[in-house]
Amino acid sequence: MDRIKKNFGFGYMRLPMKDGEVDIEQTSRMVDTFLDAGFNYFDTAHGYLQGKSEQAIKTCLTSRYPRDRFILTDKLTMAYFKKEEDIRLFFESQLEICGVDYFDFYLMHAQSAEIFKHFKACRAYETAFELKKEGKIRHVGISFHDRAEVLDEILREYPQIEVVQIQLNYVDFDDPAVQSRKCYEVCRKHAKPVIVMEPVKGGNLVKLPDAAKKVFEDLHGGSPASYAIRFAAGFPGILMVLSGMSDLEQMKDNISFMQNFQPLNDAEMEAVHKVQDIFRSMHLIACTACRYCTDGCPQHISIPDLFAAMNTKKLYNDWGADYYYRLHTASHGKASDCVRCGACEQVCPQHLPIRELLEQVAAEFEKKEEPEA
Image (cartoon, rainbow, N blue to C red; front, side):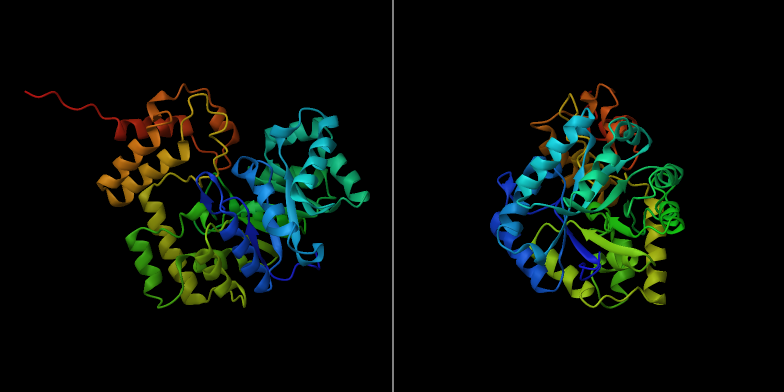
């Protein structure tokens, strides 16, 4: 871990896209800018961008820079192995796709009570520890989406875990579903360094409602992202804060306040508390657009996009939300097409009641026109 230069990482989950493919030219410029600024931590997973994220790691990073210039994290995801024997083959394929012969960090991905059972049955943790002994992994960790008591159980069962990646941002910190604070406290109890994901909650803490935006503007300086990321980075024991930057301007903004990181001062923290209260009063759908829910949907419903339209309707109550709802349902399923199979809810890191929420979305956007008198 001593090769990590700064506490800010480049998450390869929301890269710039062009015509459905990763914008290689812009992503390469982002990589160059990131490394030139003194940062070196990159995070990917096989399922990100339908497999295009790992490919972009090789094209934009590993084929262009020597191995000692970067720290690379990848993950073992449940969807890609059914039995113990599958794990090594999948792992070796990830090394090849990424163009490296070892990963600095390898995380057991999206651990929850149910997913942990599958990993245990397939001896996934034991396999990862063996790969570490062979030099193909430097550090074994987990990324986690469940209740704090489940995290405590995993860390008690596998004390060899070296690092824990959790969702932490100022909106979710005391959220009873996400339990960011409680999960963070479990990590501290077990003396595990913390990697933060979703510090800006999938962009929701960047595109703020007007009332929240004004709170930060009154501080006379700093982007909304700066307060969110600095909030997450300011806790003791934070090894890394990831940001899924999707264009060069976001990259430059994030670098501007993380290159010489300063925790939030008292006035800034007070402003954050005010914004927390504003978000709580709006009852928005807490979707981060990770898109884990869309792959297994039998009706091909673009769930995150429909939730985004619903939130826009609540925030601004303008025609644009209806327009985007029609746009996202033109070639995909409508909210009312949901067959309530529940596949989406099984993989949702936010533990959202997606089926119930889709009913609310359908009621809002698929209102029947009143017949003329």
